[in-house]
Length: 282
Image 1 (cartoon, one colour):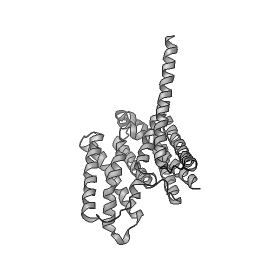
Image 2: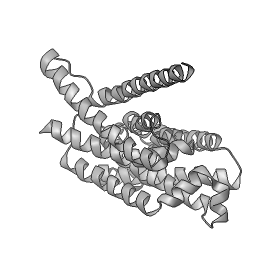
Image 3: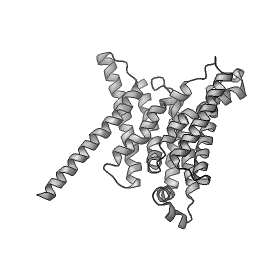
Image 4: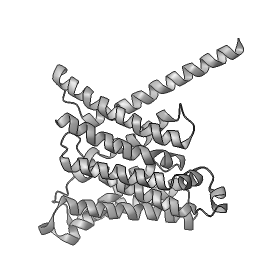
């Protein structure tokens, strides 16, 4: 039963990340997720300080993390738009400032308090029914958003100038994508942790783009590759534990599988290309 629960949650998170991962990679903003994983510390600390230890709840800390992630995303987009910074420079500036402020608050006020590290790192091996509902909600949110605004996302991702001539605001949809990313990451951090979220955002897309070259197919295959890796990783973790007595991290196995799948796909694509070139030469 626990294995089925893990498969369900991991597959749902993989689908949610796979629906927005290609859009983030095309905009060169995947490191925003790494930034969010650190800046939400500020939101967690502020939520704890504002509510007080008597009202300590994981849901309160997650709400603080979500607010901090939204502020991070909006600040990053604002620096790009109004101060003409590049995306990576904007992410680095916001990341260091917010994370440093969070460290200062932790040092001053919460040095001896446990802030619920599961809200940041997640734990694949201790999932509950609430995680299933949360992950399915993330899938529904991202799926509806992509279906409703697919053309706008496509235009703003590939040709911002042409999108402006058609009356599509690139900044509005960039902020919208950043908001979806923030909600997805905070929701997924609790269940699977930041490393696996990054792997789900980038790994399936890199594999899918080796064999398809349109945004529609990328958004179709990336979630499926993530789902396959999730199910295979949970199954492999169970086999290693039952047959070899190795209690390995399920999340670590899934992330490793995503990397192995990409390397295998890359080798296969290179082999097929070399084979085609050889036929053309002959």
